[in-house]
Image (cartoon, rainbow, N blue to C red; front, side):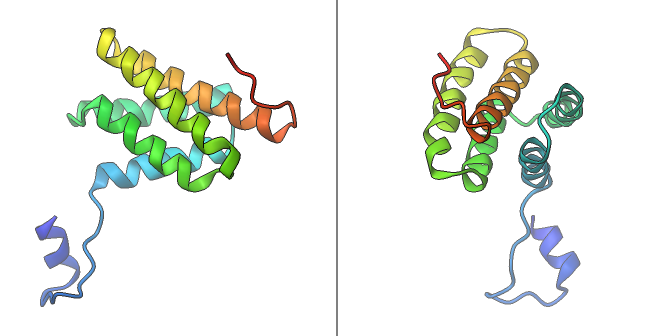
Length: 127
């Protein structure tokens, strides 16, 4: 991160903003993608980005937690507890399972479903 600061500002001061790490920017893009479109095609696009994060050794629990908080920033107040609830559920599954990409992708699909049902006016009874 220090190199990124120096690359943008050769003479940094205390007030120089520190850019977020690349993986965090990618997770923000994933959150934007989820909110923008909820379709099987979009799940494949998000899956490729999740694979990219995993191949760069970003821990899957960090991915799901960060994605959850990025989504919480972007959704209605009523949906925030659901985002956290399902993130906790799939984080637990990540720790129990062996194929983390399945659980990350399942979280993305669940979030898309919750978001779509909420905005379609169908309520949040998703158990």
